[in-house]
Image 1: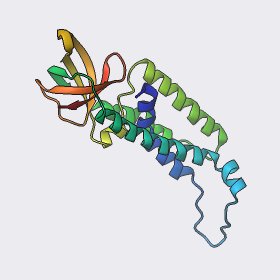
Image 2 (image 1 turned 90 degrees about the horizontal axis):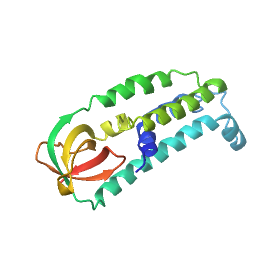
Image 3 (image 1 turned 60 degrees about the vertical axis):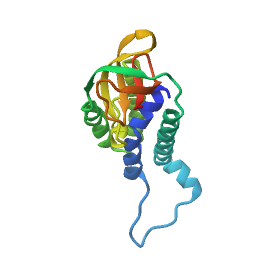
Image 4 (image 1 turned 180 degrees about the horizontal axis):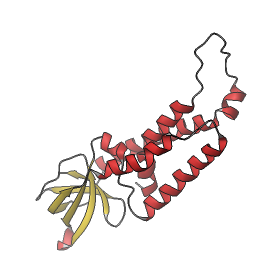
Length: 186
């Protein structure tokens, strides 16, 4: 699993919200069917958000499969601290303001796409991509852990896990970057 894939997972709710904000809806008697040509030219932004939402959901399934097929030797937890509040920081700081854009204006659509790309680049460069509200909804928590790996190598790491991690647990993992892992208690 790559950093940018976790970032896309974190934006899955945003893609869904933007899709519903921009999808063509007509409820009165004056409505006419949308032609296929119009669907792709006029509502490209809506379709792009729907496709990104579906792709991010597929990435969630990929994450689940990778964690189940993990074959790394587990690490031992020496000390642990739950930092799950970081999910909310991402949601409040980035997701909610982006939903307030005027998506009927092409300039705002371009600005939206540029901001998503820039925020993603910054999150990947600073290793903050694990602050992921979509994973929080799926039950993942963020833990700061002092972990003992093979050969008695002790490292300070960040672990995303659905399981409650406590001192002394053995945790199998998928390594995302040098200090960020997705783990499962054995």
